[in-house]
Length: 109
Image (cartoon, rainbow, N blue to C red):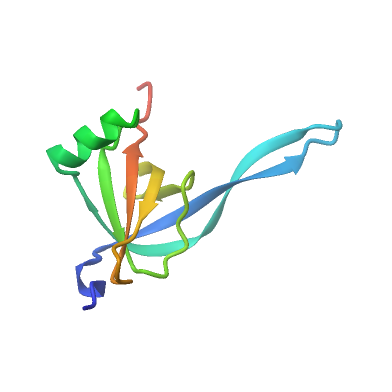
C-alpha cells in the first residue's frame, strides 16, 4: 500500500541543535533539515483525549512517508503554520509515519 498520492503538502523540517555561544556556554538554534511530503489532519476526539491524558495537547496529525526523517521536537513549517512534533508513531507495517503535533500560533498583530 502506498500513501504518496494522499500527501498533498510540502513541509520544511526544522531541528534544534546546540552551538557554542563563544562564552563557554551553548545556544540552541533551529535549522532547516529539508522538506517532506505530508498530509495534515485534525486528530480524532479519541486521539485528542489520549494525548490530554498523557499531558500533551495534540492539535494536528501529520501523515508522512515511512522513511521521512521527522523526530520528536522537530518543527514542521509550511503554509504559514508551525507544527511542533510531540511524537512520531508507525504502524506495525512500514506503510506510513504519523507525527502527532501541536500548532504553534503566532502572537500579536
